[in-house]
Length: 276
Length: 273
Image (cartoon, rainbow over all chains, first blue to last red):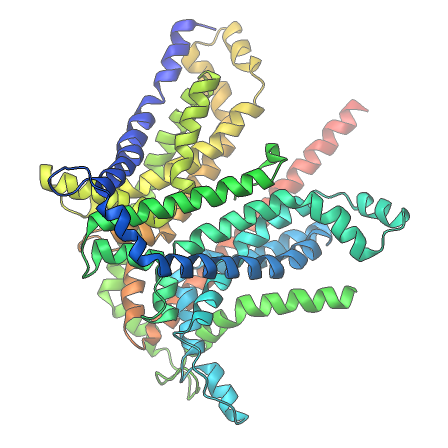
């Protein structure tokens, strides 16, 4: 191939490289700068240290996101398996039906639960008709976790389904011919083959769940603040303090990277990654 | 077992759809109540179409999504061409950086761009508004275009480009005639992905838009802050109907093109026979 043209072809990437450098790399460096340097440009660990004050919020975010992720996995796993064993035509229709709610903005989906769970909402109204309640459901930890599950469930179903769809039915037949019952075949054949899907599902639910700030605000009231709310308050809220906000963002990024690295480690067959 | 499976699938679908259907039903309710149906009305829809803020932000959303997805498709396709010619190390580095906006929590991307724009504002008096929003959208759209176009280069037979040149096409002409048609499906799916992400984005827009350039998700957010507003139910219903129509049309078109392909394959099989 013409060598000159080959260099020319490499150069066509330069607008993109400049773009990414200015709008991805530089902003992240600014986050790091704000986290470590005060107003006078002096190096300080003060902001990183003061993140420690909010350890309760960090712990709450991590466990709520973890609970939501586990429940998503438990709900999605059987569903994805059932879908993957349907006829090809039904599969594509069912998949469309499962993914459809995801195409609506998550604010609208979360708002739907606000109206359902409220003290004067439909659920309490229906319970009232059989003489129960009203129960306080909105502005609780449970409501926030429910909102996370409802919003991110499709992110778990999709990667699980796409690995299970590739499992040949004859493999399962072979397992039963060799004396496995259904449950045993599930744990000894399907689960090991679907590990990559489980790992990417966990990442795709956990990362948005731990960093959300709207779901907690809409369904959790003021009392269930998460890391996302804390960051938002430092930049757009009353507590304006971009240095602290940057430090919290940095810690959040580190947590996310650790989780992703751990998932990557557990998933040894990483040549067939399922992204989206 | 079959019955149990069906029951399970129905339960999950019920969980996914009941909240949406409740919103749809209550969008026709005469009172603001969230639990008692008292009569049928289209009042909330009428109010929605009179609401200038919503119409304006819908317009903003579409303009931003169109501009951002076109620019990021151009930028990303050119990038994919260049990256596919790079050495192993260069490729890995660029693709690694390309993944940052995808794996980073949205709020961190939003906050980091906000810090940059605050700096721009102080130094170059660039206000938060259309430009900052557009830059932010392009920034989170481009990685998806690159990821959609790159595999097409891997699937392409590397020699057809050289063959075109051997047969007398110049480098540019052989690119247009041979390479572009091969990577076109990736470009289109990248564009569509960028477009839908731009339409739907809230978190990053929230940190990078100004008062003059509010998008629909931001307006929806400020509406949900108010206690009760049945207009949101009406808006959700309209969006739901649009989504259903788009997805059904897309599904039908995909099936058709699949059938056409099948027939074409059958034909070629017959010829071989």
